[in-house]
Amino acid sequence: MYQCCIFDLDGTIINTIESLAYTVSVTMEELGYGPIDEEHTKVFVGDGYKKLIERSLLYWGDIELKHYERALEIYNRNFAQYCLYKISPYKGMKEFLQLLKNRKIKLAVVTNKAYDRAVECVERVYGKNFFDAILGDGMGYPCKPDPAGVFSIMNQLGVKPEECLYFGDTNTDMETGKNAGLDTVGVTWGFRTREELEHFAPKYVIDSPKEAESLFLSAENKAVRE
Image (cartoon, rainbow, N blue to C red):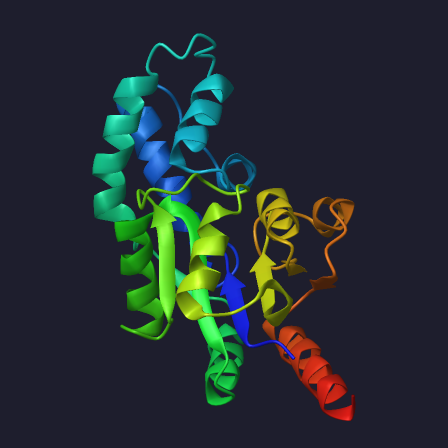
C-alpha cells in the first residue's frame, strides 16, 4: 500500500499557467519581443526556467541566444513579483490531498520551479506545513527528470520506492517517475496531452483529482485484501 505521494507543482497541484505566461511575456517584451501565449508556455515549461527562457528566445528568433543571460535576470526579477499571479488549485485537488492526509499518507512536492517561489505558491494555495516536504531548484539537486531530488525526498520521509506514487503532467515528470523507479501517474488536467503522457507508459493516466482518489482507494483496498 502506498505510504507517500510525490507531486509535481505546475500543472499538477496548482494551475500556474497565467502566472508563467504573464511573467515570460513581460520578460520578452522588455527585450523588445512579443508575448508568449499560454499554449506555447505550456509546451515551453517543465524543465526549469532556464529552458523556458531559451525556448522563448528561440521562438522569437534569437537563434544565437544573445539575450539569454539578460533574459534570465529579467525573468527572475519579474517572477519574484508575479509568481502568485492568478494561481489556483485544480478542481478537486484540495479534497484529494486532504483525503491522503487523513489517511496519514506523506505528501511531498518535487518541482523544477525555484524553491523560494515554489514555497510561496504552495503556501498561498494550501497553507504552511500542509506538505511534509518541498524540493525545488536551487537546493543542490539537478532538475528533473534526474531522480536525485525524488531520492532525497524518499530518504527524508523514510519511504521506499514501492511505497510511493509520483504525480505529474509532462514528459519530464513521466521520465522522472520512471528514473526513480516509482509507480507514476500522468494527469491530463495540466499542461500536456494524454498522448504525450501515454507515450512514456506511466502506470496510470487520470483525468481528474476525483479519479486520483478512486485510484488510491482501489490500491488501498487491494492491499487490505492481500
